[in-house]
Amino acid sequence: MGAISVSGLGKTYPGSPPVHALRAIDLDVAEGSLVAVLGPSGCGKTTLLRCIAGFERPDAGTIRLSGQVVSGPGVDTPPERRRVGIVPQEGALFPHLDVAGNVAFGLRGLGRSSAAARVDELLELVGLPGLGRRRPDQLSGGQQQRVALARALAPKPSVVLLDEPFAALDASLRSSVRSEVASVLRSTRTTAMLVTHDQDEALEMADEVAVMRDGTIIQSAPPAELYRRPVDVATARFVGDVVVLPGEVRDGLVECSLGTLVAVASAGCGAVPVGRVTALVRPEQIVRDDASVRRASVVSLAYHGHDALVGLRHESSTFLARWSGVDLPRPGDEVGVRVSGPVVVLPGDPPAG
Image 1: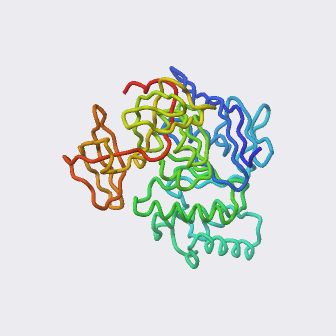
Image 2: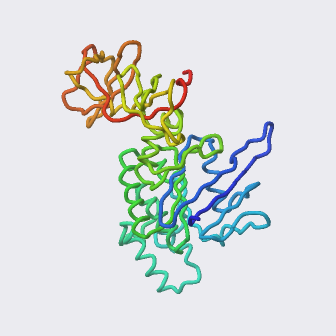
């Protein structure tokens, strides 16, 4: 059982028809780890966070924090007694308080000198020493989010919940701030759950990623396993670009339009399926190899500096490859291609569309 343990959690909102926001959710977050709950808008991830925080009461199931039941049959511990820290979107700092006042907000019961020492400690931790007297409107967006994290950590909560905390930041800030936040959480061995719709954010920050769809957790796995061995085509597409091809498996090899490739089972299959399958090839697996007999025409090029997404046509298929931004072909060129490494296969033909 983890520091956060959710079992059979259900939540339905009344309406015509009713909205089944959560459907029998099971999730464990190990002590000291960071789990990202990843999904599109409306999938139920924020409802899950609000139930754990105590802001919503589920209709079914149990929530345990550090082994203690805080929500379940006959139990509904109020939010202020759950020892949960919250980092909301856009920081949500109190505008009438300075930075030190915001961080100290949850330190009721501590003496003034002890609270001041704790505030100084946290501002040092989040990289904002000496800014205690600044007002929130004198801070950048990234600084505000770090103050919000310090405020959440101040009372030493058992867990910290982060609700789309970087969504309002400029793209240029987002990567550096989330790296700083992840570093602080790991250095303090804080158990954390991050709710996000941003795939890069989830894969970069989390020890484990739980993908939600329609109120259900579809797959929960470490980032590399989730990316390499998704349970279905929809999950594969949600966490990154993917080439989806029909194929046929015999003797552990899949024959498809890109060649005869080593097949591996998805996370949802115990063994490699036999017969008609769907092969999943990541764009970075498609390597330019001018010596290859398999030829493809370049139909598009999306340049990103460090790399590029190259649109290729081979036979009747059009697909993307991700290549280094150095010495790229041009649209209209013909190149040789091959697939590097094994590919995941799922039973049955690819879904329509």
